[in-house]
Image (cartoon, rainbow, N blue to C red):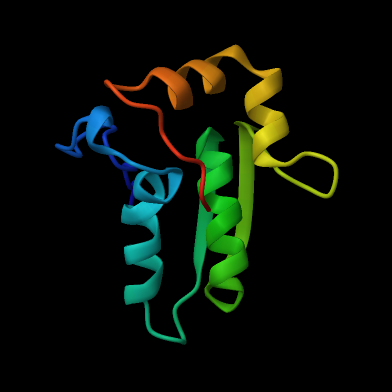
Length: 107
């Protein structure tokens, strides 16, 4: 099963309606929360999806068997979300200029 994050793919929301990166991750967090305790998934994140699967790994560690980062942002001890945004023009544009207002970064 492939899942689209908010304002992506088949998700009908507009990027301008997202107020935080947590809004962007919401479809994945809802799916993970809906799994029963015996279900485990393989997560694959590409590009900014790496941030989404990182958050899922933190919130639902027992529901994930493997996480794969495919050319994805992978935060760690020395690479925070803020540093990723400063280093990558795409992230900077997406967070600062998506829609008519600045998005708040709050994971």
